[in-house]
Length: 126
Image (cartoon, rainbow, N blue to C red; front, side, top):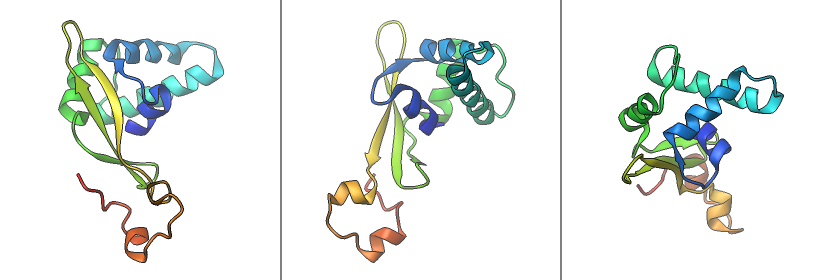
């Protein structure tokens, strides 16, 4: 789920309403946006444990807070650790996917990766 959100919004903050708007593209005929929206809808349904029909910003916000917010997870095949951060403001929460650990190659910036680190990509300091 975090991988999909990161791919769609990158380092930018987004609101649950933005996700609802992106999901509305699932029924459109535009190939790329419809494909991304369908992928997002499938991930949300899996996270909710049921088909995620008629999404609203309130439902998404509750789903994010219950299952994703401030819970580290592996992304990119276990090479990175990311977390969904929630920033509260007056009207709606903003969310942002934050990378806690970069892949070993980026983290070491050209230095050799030890055998211990290479075998344990999950060894993040959380």
